[in-house]
Amino acid sequence: MSPGFDLSLDQLHHYLFAPVCGPEDSYEVSVAYWPRLRAECEARGTRRLLVLEALEGNAVPSEARQVVEALVQMGFHDIRIAYVDATEDAALLVSSEIRAAQAGVTARVFRRVDEAESWLLEGVA
Image 1 (cartoon, helix red, strand yellow):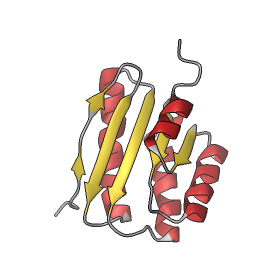
Image 2 (tube, helix red, strand yellow):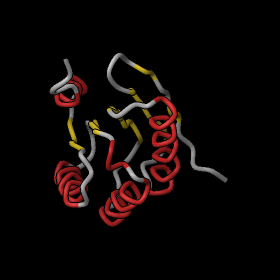
Image 3 (cartoon, helix red, strand yellow):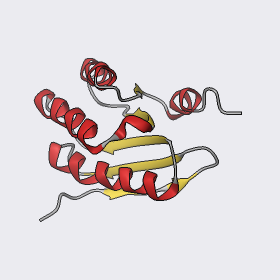
């Protein structure tokens, strides 16, 4: 049985916008939706991704580490990722951002979509 979540995809001018929502924030949900995002980025030739996560509950710190490791294994090194989660523990988000950067993934975490979009589009003419 696959974890329950809803993932929408909207190709905007310079990036793929991907809101994801569902009843549970878990490792299983994350490792189910991130591969879809990777495949969509590849198929569309998109190198910028804005993920708006609106899953209920909060991630477990050990699972957050596993999700970052999974992103590295999925090959997100060539995609600039802005990740928005307004409810997750800030320290957990920052530690995940640092771990991703140390692994060579260009990703930042944000509380608001407008801030994420500004960072994501830096340098776009």
